[in-house]
Length: 582
Image 1 (spheres, rainbow, N blue to C red):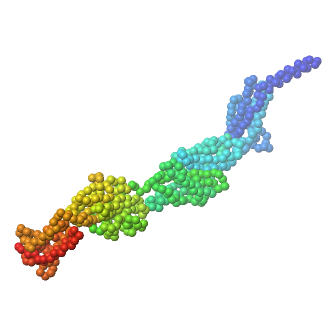
Image 2 (image 1 turned 30 degrees about the vertical axis):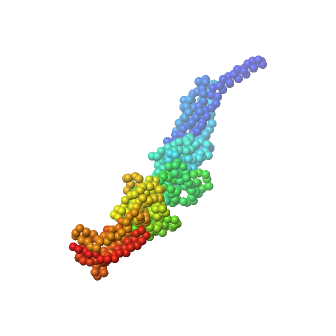
């Protein structure tokens, strides 16, 4: 054979071989082999070959159950494009397997796949990093770390019942965190016990972890929390790892902000929290930190509304301070029923309260007659404080005081301001009143604290000042002390005292009395004595005697009188007898 023929033959052989390699030029890729340990069926997961020249006939599966044994044919299939092949094994040992592909385009050559062993190795055991409660949704969620195994397909989630010993599969997910619906794990109740296990592509499952339980926080409010200003917190410790620190977070949910955080020992499971204030909704949460790790777990958030005492329907009030009786001051007021109160009394300008008058909670009004402060000389101050059931001062009245009327120069009278209503914004004015012998008559009205008595008469007259709110619906008042003022005398009036010598109680002259235009009521006093020297009457000489003693008519006859008059800066005494005739 010459050289040319040899080259042509070699070229043709080369072309033939190249055509053969263009068909099943590579074996199938055997990805994994998974054994069903119950049925003994192995599932082979493959990446099939292509067949451009349509030469494929079948796949043959070979295996051995020991590395010292020879491979034996286990079966064959005629489907080219398949991703799985199922083969029944004679035993449930760990087989080594491969696949031969028949044929190449030349109809002779075969290709063998890679050899793999049945995957019956479970993934590494894993534990949850933590089981916690989402701060926003308040749903339980778990988190864990990927194990070192190369073939991890997902994770089985279990709800654990330690009493029955059952582990119920909740879900299977290829995720590292998972949030559970409330019907599965309710963060406000106990029993939230979660365990996990990894599984691989052959559904080989790892060992189920120990269960983890998040912290369950509860809050109890004592019935007397308003007094103690305290609230009780307790929680179940985290189960699954040891805790080195607990952090207690306190939120003001009305203001929507965190107001305090306390670091507590990891062994702590309760805390008595002192409320900084009342009448708001507080939120509480505990976060535990794993010993030596950065993992944490958050409890549920518990809210607690801690209302303050209800607003009183009756405000603590001193309605009036007035001089109702000579030389004593009367204070009147009220407070909320069911609470106690104390009236504080002191002389104006004194730092300390000289008197403290307590009233128990069975009352809610008071009338106090102050006998320790003389209304003719002293301005006293009064303050009423209400105490709630905790004994704390709840509210108080305004500071009230009596009106002290004094005589000034040039027939003027002066008095101090009545401060109680001023502080409460109640408009009022002062009435100047004069005693006419039987009643008080208003002679002037003013908003100032001084009044001129010019033109109001002569002699010694009695005055007082009354403060009254301008609102006619208000019935309170404040009387000052009574003040006698010598207004002088009318020089035009005659100064002759006429004393009758007799009178007839049952006749035309029924009253024995004096007459003098210069003497005013109260300036002359009459005393009547019987024959045995017993005084049977004493009274105003201008009003006179009606012939009675102790409301009984006396016998007719002679009686002795003594009349003493003080007027116009002088004193007169008259003595004599009067003949009483019937």
